[in-house]
Image (cartoon, rainbow, N blue to C red; front, side, top):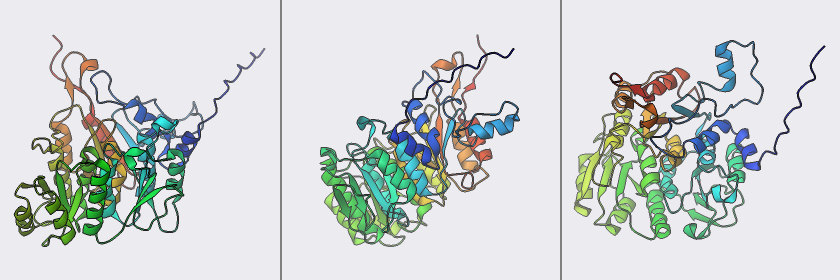
Length: 415
């Protein structure tokens, strides 16, 4: 005689914000893990592998282990030390990151505003990342002049930015002539050349923050891989990002520097991207100028992650931190991912230059900051890495290697 079937649990209604997240390419895993990663502590080891399943169906009991893992989204979407925001393009990645940072299931979890940038305007997007910093907290979303792309529209609907006093009532900041999703109050930044746009964003930053910046970052206008790490730092610090040509200091950039003559300036990138002539030109305006650089985009990002000069620089030279890894040839992803550097585990942007091979310099850096413990792993410090992009950008083998480098390791013998 067959046993009576067990009654099924009744499902709770799904909040609208969660429905929007589920509809994005990046899937709900980014949102759920964000709640788990609320701090960079010494009490727990980061995201639990069973935290979220990006597929809706049940796992078949008879499926092979590898197929089961794929159905659950592991390891392609999450491992014990990594979480992937797996959009096929920066538009989807920006939407997923915004919802991971602001789950938006209730009004207190929504941002006051978002920043909308054009899909071809990586310089404006990197400069606009500063608006993610406190007190504004506006994540970057990607728009067009013809309307909001579907991922952006879904995220915008869930985020529902209404503006607050910190944004002077604006629910959206728009860089250029992009669609703003019907936001009730919009503050627009006129789009010009990269230097002029960045200078206008810096002026908006000064008005909203109500105080001068602690530092200014000058990044290469024509070398996106070298400029990308500035987005994460701007979101974390509130330092504006300005642009320079290789052999020229644009007038709008010089004007901002003259407005803040006592503010230290940090030039990001090697002399092949911004020449020593330009650095000397900056020094004539502001004598407190220093260069942070690496010979290629991967090394350059690591240089900023390691850099320590007073209260400028990540100074991430030990375990117990968050990190974000993106492709060096996708500069808009730097701005899309910037909110992850200003929330949760607050980590620098690192770069890989290959879909399937972890660069030796990045492997060495992650190994150098690999966490360890001697007796009690629950009292250790932990690293967590966000991986930005789908497997066409960074494949699962590279993600698995990153996970291994972030894994807590036992050091020595137990007494």
